[in-house]
Image 1 (spheres, one colour):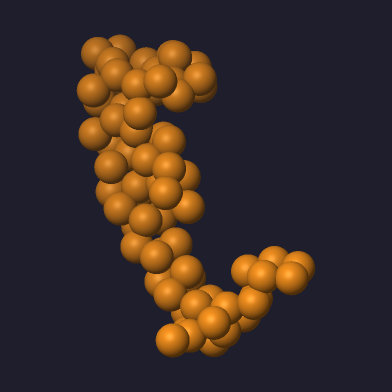
Image 2 (cartoon, one colour; image 1 turned 180 degrees about the vertical axis):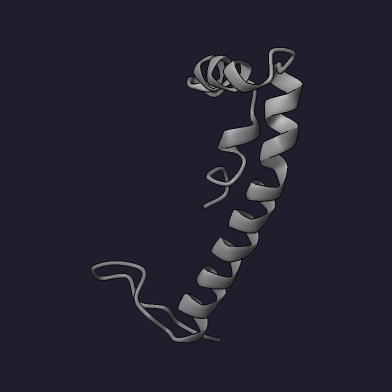
Length: 73
């Protein structure tokens, strides 16, 4: 959960050159900064959504996985 939302805005993402090439079809001046700045709102939405999902999962005491119960103190 920690790195999932920000994978799309990191310069080390494997598919970033491909995304830049596709973006340049529609805006010739687009570069890495353009793509990253356009993806920041989506990153924020995914981060908030995942945090709410994680909190709801915890509060409903749904087990994390087989043999891993949630224990509230």
